[in-house]
Length: 204
Ligand SMILES: C[S@@+](CC[C@H](N)C(=O)[O-])C[C@H]1O[C@@H](n2cnc3c(N)ncnc32)[C@H](O)[C@@H]1O
Image (cartoon, rainbow, N blue to C red; front, side, top):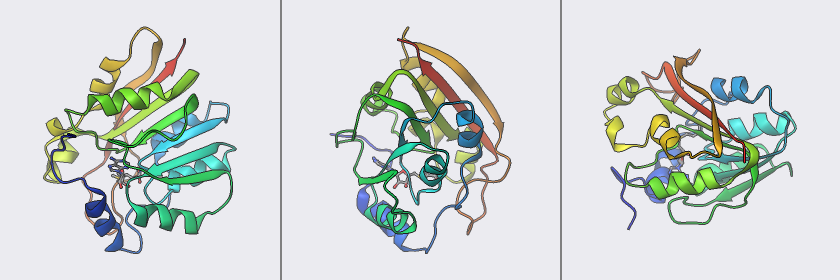
């Protein structure tokens, strides 16, 4: 059985999305814009795509995007905002469902919660990157997580994901940096000012 630090069920996420017309900013996450700017557009997997701001930005930049989220409410909202064929919106629980696709040129996780015990989920997402492709994992810094009442030790951090990468990988970026503007819901006080960024390239 999948272990989660609290109830990250589809129903919980759906309820959260249903409470607001918009839960997250409609702007691309800054780390995505920075880290992807020097990549040639190809096929991208946006993991935990939420309301779709990153998927839309990637599609604008020429990527074919598969955007996956556990919350049907979020998937429907994102699809209604942008129904163009360059983005395939998929409802799936990546703890139990199969990743929709393989050999991606980019697999991007922005603030995607993976319980510490679910290293298999991280391994599966790492395995979805094709040779020459990029894995981008962006998380809130641990102090910001604590300030929001959660324990960062309950979740895999970018360092933990990096530790799962073997000799087939080259780390391009591993750092904590200013996010540029606070992350999280635009309707709530956010303590998320720092991003922890892991970017790695699969070299073989
Ligand atoms: C903190 S939000 C981040 C949303 C978006 N990436 C962003 O940066 O605005 C995490 C997202 O992951 C989704 N999610 C959580 N657990 C999931 C799972 N097991 N499978 C797929 N999506 C999941 C949630 O529904 C939510 O949309």
